[in-house]
Length: 263
Ligand code: GCO
Image (tube, rainbow, N blue to C red; front, side):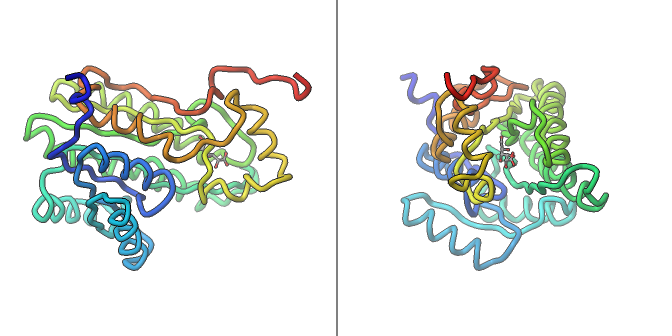
């Protein structure tokens, strides 16, 4: 049955930055498709425990691990613990990230480096220990969460755009090097979604809010649940010959030049 192609029963999926927002929505989607979900967070044990409880209320079996995705030794230790306590990681979703909305000429170097480290270098750090184990077991799936800023620039998010642009190419190079080991590496590129990360620019009357509704052919902000399908597809057998691709889930933003306000 073709629907079995999307069945994740028996799989273990690690999703970073999954205590809220897009990470949580995608992790719940993988859980609903049958996977055992392992969520990562960095802020606090309480936040992770609260998230695990929320997954449980939604009927998704999840367990939480607190570690810093930019800390190489910490990541290696966490991956080893997860594989011993939960099982071999079949699916890795690199979702953890930050954004700082500051014009490039005003951005301190330390802030620029922090965004690059958290949104790009972290994927290099997180993925290698997981993929080394996947290769030893015959294969696996990696999904990197990209952005509109993997393709487009925007005032005040230069560091973020540099990281997300770099992530698209890191995704392609990982795909190139690991396809022969049956490891597929792809990206999901969210458009503009209603999350805590976009809350500051999604306020009624805020010029950017109106701009996005105008600029998005679908005429609305995305709902985090809209990402579940792409995540399940890229985590499942349905994408076994798909690698190095970024699936943009953006309500049509990248497909169009946009339209005048009165059209
Ligand atoms: C912004 C937004 C974006 C979105 C998303 C778009 O300030 O432009 O926060 O970065 O979160 O990445 O794809």
